[in-house]
Figure: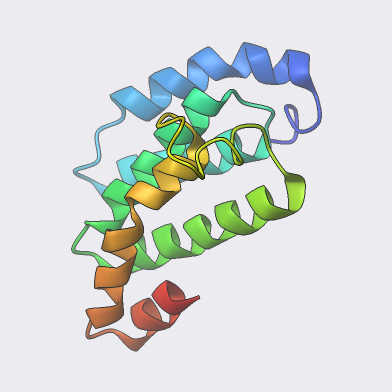
Length: 134
């Protein structure tokens, strides 16, 4: 993560590896979920292209559908961080999806998971409900 932060060249070299890890990691075990979580964190920290960011947000969306409360909590926490980082940094693509013009931006991917986040408001676990509300 540190190698690609604020370094476009290093980030570009990481993009293919991150995409392969994100698409080929098995999620049936906790180790796979941990690897995917770190992959998402890295994608969001480096200067990755928007398609990779969409992939990361979609992974978080799959985490939200997991039965394990810990995985769902981590997904909600990370999605909140993505939204906050996007608002502060003004990343490319965040403005284009507002009017429905570009369905392939990270911002529009976040919007696609809105109903899943709203469903988390009905969760019996109070920590999940609080995170979803934020």
